[in-house]
Image (cartoon, rainbow, N blue to C red):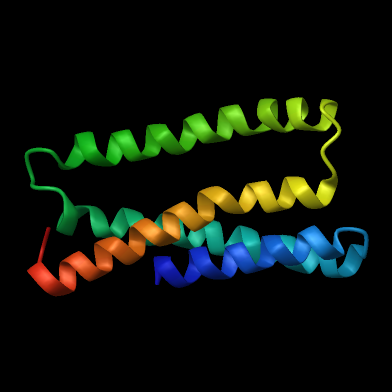
Length: 120
């Protein structure tokens, strides 16, 4: 499910890169993007017991949460730098797709590894 959410979130951000100036469509795409990202995060948290051994589970989930928060802290600052550098709104939304694509790829790899080797 998390993989599908990341993929749909990416598609919505790509849609926003093209339709950000059509307010009703932009609001709808933003809503679906938010639902997808938060849904994917919830899905990833439910995978933790299967991914991490019990002795490392809290550290693994804590590190994953910390990395997510680091992204939440750095992204507004980086966006400001990119706006100052003259990046277009469309380009910014396309850049925002990169973390979602990386997350979807990692989920795909994890899914493939789990189906091939069982619990990793």
